Length: 178
Image (cartoon, rainbow, N blue to C red; front, top):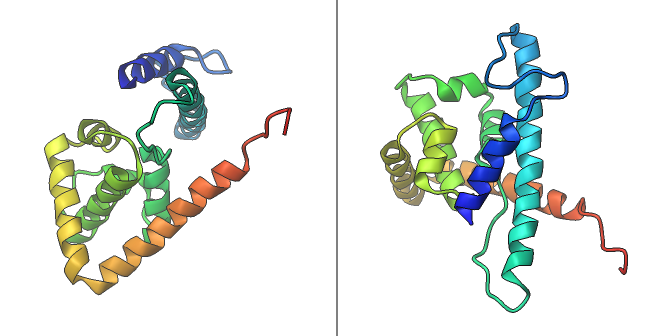
């Protein structure tokens, strides 16, 4: 089903934006580009939720389904950048400063544990190789056992992500028969 999801996402992203511009070909000033990227992000989130519903319907009520936390790497990135007061661009920079590398590894760890995405998919979300993601996930998992401050930060971030999932679940429209 991931192949189906990816092909549908690619097709949706190939569609022009409301202003008639194409997301991949736009050469606009920063503010307009940011608005376009926000629009694309919202479209991807909405489409991903629709695909999850479709997959659930295709699986049928009798089949067991792999638990899907329902978060996107973009949502984890947003939570991490807000929590650590860094920008999205900071996460994408190629710096190896300890603080930024650790924050990026925390984002990898949370994506791996709270999204249904594979290591290569998480890597693409951060413009990194899947082996870099794997190293970061293992590093944070190891440090979490010994570093109480890191464990506290991760617990707070995981609570924020759980709140996000709960909020999304409460916003769903009930069926007409309910």
